Length: 130
Length: 418
Image (cartoon, rainbow over all chains, first blue to last red; front, side, top):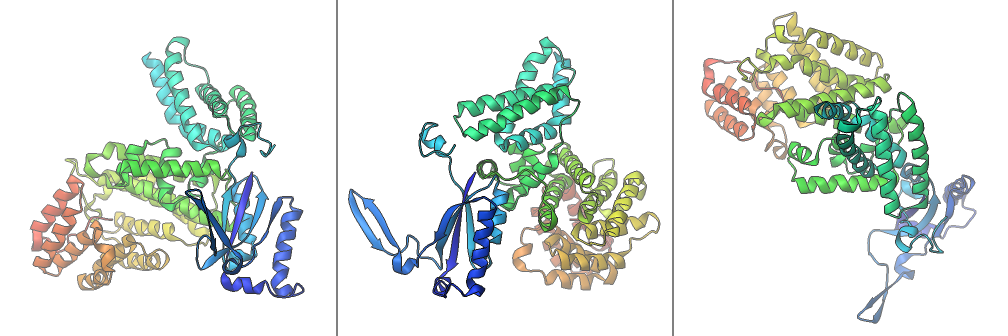
C-alpha cells in the first residue's frame, strides 16, 4: 500500500537548505535517511520543495475564470517542505518511517494513505497499480 | 427451535470476541467483519433449527462469516489485493473448519483499538463494541454521549483502521508500554462504568464489569511479565471481591467503611493479593499497582478493625505523583481526612482546581462528609445538595440524603468511594 509522508517544516528550516552539500552535520541525517528508505525497497519517490513564500503559486478556477495568486495555499507557521512516497504494508510501518525522518524532530510529518485508483476509475484504468 | 436458538446464543457469548478478532485480523476490516459475523448469526438462526446444530459451531460461523465477507468485497469492486487477501483467508478458514480451534487474535484487536492513530476518546468505546460486541446505543448511554455522535466516532475509527491499514500486531519494546497503558486505561474505564451501577441498570452494567475482567485476564495471560497489566487485574479482583458487600440485603448502598468484611470474597482477595505480589516483583511501579495497593490496605480491615489509613495516604501520594486524576486527588483528601483529621483533608480539597470539581460527584460527597465532621453544617448541606444533583444511582442518593440529615449524629461518616 502506498503512503505519502507530507513533511512540514518551520520557515527557518528552508534557510538551512542553503548550506553547502558537504555540511554533513545538516545533510548527513537526510542522506542516511533517504538511503535507508531506498535500501529497504520502500522508497517510491519524493523530494524537497522550494520555499513556499517565494516560489509557491496557487491557482483556482472560479466561474470559468483562472485566478492565479502569489503564495502558498495555506499561510501557516509550518509549511509543506517536501514529500516522500512509500510502499509499505501497514500504517504502523509508515509511522515507523515517519518517526525516523529528520524533520519529525523539528517539524511534523503527516502520514496519509493514497486512495485506491481502481476504486475510483475501475480495474481497467491504466494508471492503477497492479 | 429453542435448542438451536440457545446454541446460537451460547456460541455468540463464548466465541464472539475470538471470531471477530480472527476475521478482522485477516481482512484488516473491522466493520466488514462485524457485518459478516452478524449475517452469519442470522444464517445460523435460520438454518440450525431445521438442519441441526453443527458439531463445531465456531467453525460453522467462521465459515459463513468468511463467505459473507468475500461476497461483500466482490460486490464493492474493491482493491485487487484486498480480494487476494480474502482468498487466502478463505483457504485458511477452510482448513480451520477442520481443526478444533483457530488462532486467538483478541489481543491484537485490543491493541488496534487503542492505537495512537485513533482518537483517544474512542479507545474504550471501540473496544467495547468491537471486541465485546456491545451495541452503539448502550455504549453511548454509558459514556453520556449522544448516540449519533458516538456512532459517528466509532465508524470513523473503523474506517481509519481499514483505510490506513493499521497493523494487527502486538507492538514490542517502548511502543508496547505506551500502547499497553492505553489498553489498560480503556479496560479500567469499561470496568468503571460497570462499577457505578447507576439508574437501576445494574444487570447490564454487571455484564460490562465482567467483560472488563475478562479483557484484563486475557492481557495477563498473554503478557504475564507486564507489571501494570497484573496491577489492573489485581485492582479489578479487589473491587469484585467487595461487590457482595456493596449493597445491603434490601439494596441499600453501603460505603466501604461500613461494609461487612465477612461478605468479602476471600478467594478473590487471595487472588488479588497474589497478582499484586507478582506485579511488585517486576519492580516497575505504576498507577494500577498503586490503586490495587490502596485496595489491599483497605482489606487490612479483615484482620484489624481499622483500615491502615497512614499507609493509604502514602499510596495516594504516590498515585497523585504518577497519575493526578480527579479520583486520585479526592481519594488522597479523603484518606488524609481519616489519617490526619478533617481539616487537613478539607485543605487538600480546597486546593483542587475549580474547573475540575464542578460536576465531579465524589468531590462533593467527600467534601460534604469532611465539612460535616468539622461541624460546618451549612456548608456541608450545600455540598450534599451538589453531590445529590450529580448522583443518578437511587441507592446512593438515599445514602447521601440520609447522611445529610444525620449531621452530627455520626461524626465519622465517610464518603462513598469514587
